[in-house]
Length: 216
Image (cartoon, rainbow, N blue to C red; front, side, top):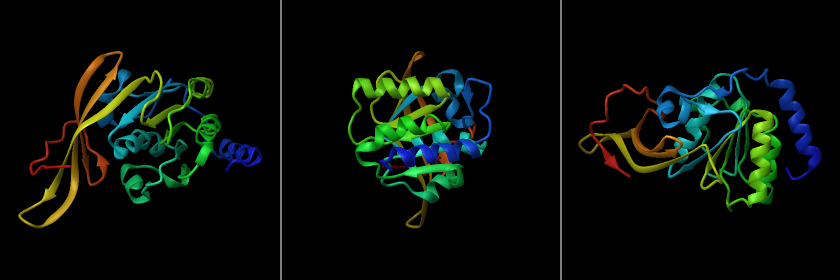
């Protein structure tokens, strides 16, 4: 993936297949995630930092992907296709580069020109100039970036402070449902939220709390 010709070819192919972008400045976002974000949705041209949960980071792509948008996942060496599908991510519209090596930042910038949402799992923090270049491309091409880790001046930082599972009975059963306590920091200040997953998918905001909780 480090060849400029290969990257340009990939950009051209995705541009030909991806539908027209929406006129609104927001990106489709699952109802269960909306309270976590300023404005209630992902915003075009913005970046988001997620700490403590790969599932939460992937969930931010789910509604956009299910709505027909193309997404990208870069640097997630532990990516699980089954978990992504359960969240609602369409793998046939998802560019997955688990081991980008030293090209992670460059590929992120290139794919931000043609994809709607890009998830980056960096192995090293970007330099100030690199993050500025990525931010400029996000604004220019109406894309959003989700980063698992620190990122300069994100629209919002989401940090998981507690994770609990449900599904085990008296010595039997499976861990199927999950409840996260997520602290967000953005222009609204610092807030605490509860996010729930049922069978791997994002649960509706009004769903009942989990009963048999197992901390992880």
